[in-house]
Each structure stands twice: as C-alpha cells, then as structure tokens.
Image (spheres, rainbow, N blue to C red):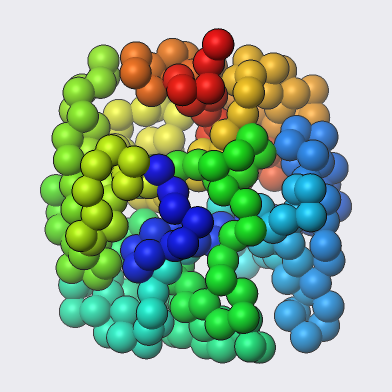
Length: 264
C-alpha cells in the first residue's frame, strides 16, 4: 500500500479538474467531509481539499471548452526534467513541460505511450499529500490501458516500477510497486485492460483514484443523493475488499474501497 515517505514512483498527489469548484466542493464535502482551502492569485486559483486539517487532494477550475472533468494522479520524482526526457524516450509525450509551483515543488503533465495522462511531482516545501490510507483519502491508483504489458514496460522505464500478477475472479490483475521494494505492502496500484470494466472503457486510457471508506454501500447511496452517478455497483473482491465506481456531478470518475482488512 502507499507509504507516506513517498519514494520515487509512488503516487504522491492527486487533483481534480472541474468546471465548477463550488458544485464539486458541495459533493465531496457531503461524501467524504472534505473542506476547500481556496487558492490565491499566486497559484492561479488552484486550491486544496482538506480532511481534519490535512491535504487529501488539489482542485482547479477547468472550463468545459479546455478539457473534460477528471481526476489526475501524480507520481514522485526527484527530478521532473529528467523524468520528462525519459517519458519522451519511452514513447510518451508532454501535455505540459515541468514548471515550478512557487517554492512548493516542480510539476509536469504527460501522456504515456498508450495515451493515459499522468503527472509528476518533485517536492519542494510541499512533500505531497498530507493524508493517505485513511477513510476519505487516497489508498490505491489504477491504470486502464489497451495494452497492459506495454504500459507496464513504459512505466518500468520511467519510474522503475515492478509488477506482479494477482488472480482475481475477472482474470489476472497486474499489481505495481516502486523500484527496489518487496512484499505485498509495497503495492500501491494496478493495471487493468481497458475493456475489463465496462464502466471505464468509454473514458479511454486513464488513471482512476480509489478512496478508502468504511461502508461502500453507504457511499454509493451518498453519491446518488448528492448528484453523482454510480457507474459500477458495489461488489466484493475476494481477499481485496468491497469496491464501487462513480462519477461526480461534473463527470469526473473515481472509485472507493472498503479494504478487506478493515472489515469486521
């Protein structure tokens, strides 16, 4: 699972691009209890969501004519510029080149060799997310791609990720962990064939963040009550937990899981 030390290649930041921050905030506050800390002019209006005083995500306005509402996952790098060069050498491309964000850190946005967007974060004064692995916070990240081996090879080149195969009822599942790590506790995400989950296929290659919850079914009911949509009803995965997938009122996709280890 995620390590708060955020070694190279770990997911260390997520953010939401949405056309209406107020509507998004009402939704995620009602669902997870997140509070908005608005961004000032020095950050271009980029704000953060916090839970019990700790940062769980970033959020920014993305007008509808500039992009689809979406969650983005960022990965730890010690050198964003070097990572950008490696991305291009591996067949990916830069959506925007690395840039400094005040003294907080340096970030860049890319697409992998199969078209999935991802970001990198080189920490400065901001080391990354202030809360992970707790209810309402990031616990897992999943890549949907048309070619699992090719995607795994791309990210092995870029970050050194290692992979292992887990057998699930729907078929083999490729799990990912940072370079040099060992054991099941070091896995932070997985790679799925794009056509493996019908609710995700239409979005094309993409990353899907999972948030930890205590009650998947209650969250699903909350999503519908708050104006979102259930795209995959709650289901139990043996030895994993109970998961469901959703879109928020603007259409940004995310998932939740009650991990098996939390079940009574």
